[in-house]
Image 1 (cartoon, rainbow, N blue to C red):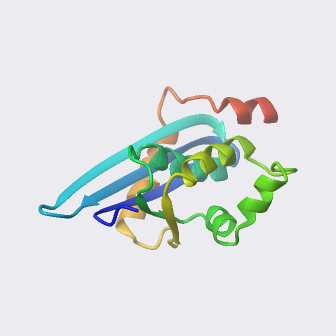
Image 2: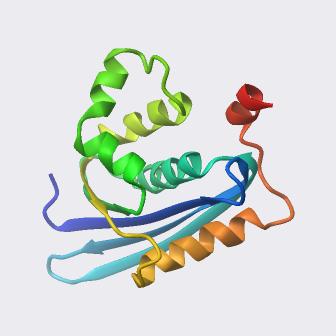
Length: 163
């Protein structure tokens, strides 16, 4: 565990229609303390032509975690998704994994999530959406704007299963 480095990942996902065009927004704040203080900020967003809100919420967290270059980092993930927070905090994810995600949705993303999840020390913090939390609101705008772009990516797994 690295006590000198703290990483805060704020995320949001959206879809216009559920399913429909969707997007995610991520804001990463990395703070390093020691002899000097460093702060690094990164924003990421991407849009998809046909997906769901839950997939975009989960993908936002995955993308944020995958941007962390060093392993075993202290990470706090802020999300307004009860779907994700409850799955992690109630430890449902471990029984899902043990049962090979039998009859669960978004298996491809949950497996990808777990790969990054096991590499760090992560705390999940739920934030009430649309409650004037400026970074959550920023991620919401990023995700909504991403869903409206002209050249949206294809969520191949979702589209193959649902069209």
